[in-house]
Image 1: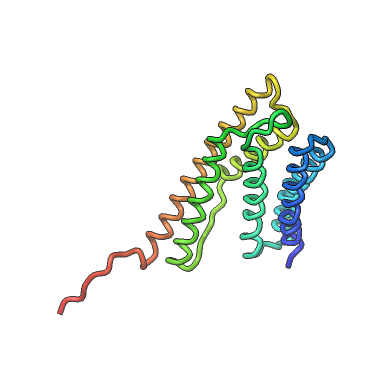
Image 2: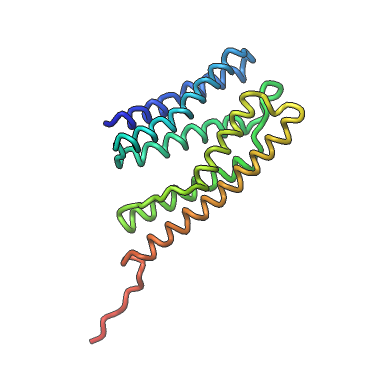
Length: 199
């Protein structure tokens, strides 16, 4: 259990606190709950860079970290995006449903692909890409934009701009991951056609 993995686990443990504070704000309109939700989200998002820095610079990369780090990102973002996809007026704005559908659709597709590759090949090789990092950053920007209530008035234009960018990079990264998965399956003997032995 490395220091980087402990920080990643802390990020996962912060997610329920973020969701609870967000729900309390949407039910009561108490600004303290919105502030608490923003602080928890910012800490969890900031720790993403901290555990990555520690893992790289102190040689703490591990197989557990390779699983937990993207899992923490997904749990934080998906919980925030789903919660903000409903109409919470007048308290908070709403994430466009087409962005929510793009993100959840891609993640479900990747999850199914991971299961298929794991069952067929026995080991999944995930290669991080810049498009996936851009998608994560833009998704976080959309969430923060709404939590900060910057989507009011002229901020609506920027919210849709961030959302469109997030959808594009999410789709592109999904296609690239599918391409990598197909290559892994294609290079494995289990995907080759069986030939009947001739007597």
